[in-house]
Amino acid sequence: MTEQIERPRIIEDETMVDADVHLSISDADLIPYLDEPYKSRMKHSRLGASPRDGWDRSVSGKIEEDTAGVQSPQAIKSALCDEFHVDYPIINTFGLMSRNPEVEWSVALMRAHNDLLLDQFLDVYDEFKGLITLTTQDPAAAAEELDRVGSEKQIVGAYVHNTGPNPPLGDPIYDPIWAAAEDNGLNVAFHGSANGFMYEFPRQNQSLNQFLGVHVLAHPWSHMLTLTSLIVEGVVEKFPGLEFAFLEAGLSWVPYLMFRLNKEYSIRRSEAPLLEKSPEEYIRDQMYFASQPIEEPNEASDLNSIIDVVGADSVLFATDYPHWDFDSPDALDRHLRDAFTPEERTQVLSGNATEFFDLDL
Amino acid sequence: MADEEHVVARESDIDDGERLIVDIKGRDVAIFNIDGEYHAYINWCAHQSGPCCEGRRTGTTDASFDRETLEQTLTYSREGEILNCPWHGWEYDIKTGECLSRSGVRLPSFPVQVDEGKIIVSF
Image 1: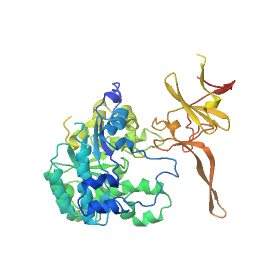
Image 2: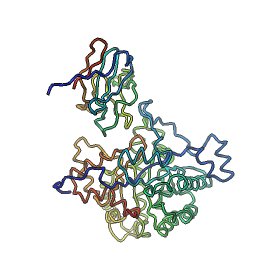
Image 3: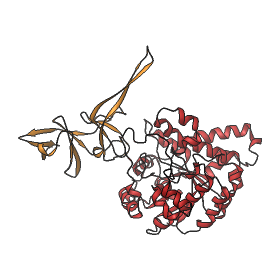
Image 4: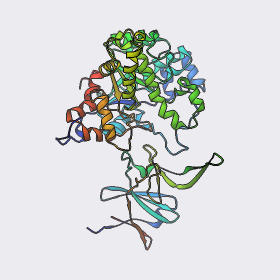
């Protein structure tokens, strides 16, 4: 963080890689990509892919999510890329099946999501990149999926929905997934959700009285659980070539967890015997954090300090388009323009994503 | 420089409870009709610059708490008077332009007058 001396380029002239763009796939969309008996199940079942949890996302009808902008690559181009100056959308399916109880069904849904993504969204524009959706109940199946579609040209990473997988994702049962990701040269992006909250935090889902509380806690709680598990179980040391990104929880939770892990690691080192360095070093070396939903301190400049602590070399620009808490690029960029060098700004808007997703810009 | 007057519509163009968004000198300006009174605001949310004036009109929920009985009472009021930005749901009182969640934040407004059935916005 330094004094700004040079006038920053306008956002239209910056290369922008958006680390978190979602599809909105309906049950009917998936039918052509499912094999029997799942194809017929999807046709006839009212359960579908995404059982809902009863929470009102709309605030009694005040806000409504418009997903028309992600129904085709052309729609994404117009509604996101042209409107918000995003050059490279990193598209994930927002598949939530990792929270589901039925293993085979979840694996079938995983494959269908990936085939749909490849078939419909990634071969129109070279700039559109995708993340393979992985489900975690059957780690061998997830590893096979990485081998099946991981070498597709437009695939630049893996997406894991991490609100719901049990046990937490550092557990050794998942090692085959991380090994396959490392072997395929694909880094892993974790994405929490309120949709998995009822599985991951059932007591709280039952007892919080408002969706506001559920949504505020779902993403950081999931990420804190995942990150802690990856560090304490030594996943970061077992797979040194693998990097992880955490999407959709903003940034301010990171310094607290990082420093708390440092503290406890020094007291209880023998419980994490694989580690060769401090948790903070692993986090800084192997982890990235997406900006959205950027926090809103009453004193805006407080967030500059947070970005600085997390590190301009660890933050990924993301919009979360088209969800109701998405960020317009300026929400982050106003901080970058205000308190960071042009080089640091470029790093956040495209450089870090280029490294993490190994993009050829 | 004195404000210019812009005839944006006739009264019959904006029914009670309706709105009209017009371009005035390159700016999106929304004119709302509430009970025959007109309110004009810039279509630009204070949060992240979303098109707030295109959002849904609803009422809103408030609460009071009685310290003696420990009872909370919910009320729903101002139906049709609350504007919700379509991007992130920031709420504004259409009669005053005030943001409901952040004190001191308000939508920039423009004077509106009616002359012989014509709605005139000045800025």
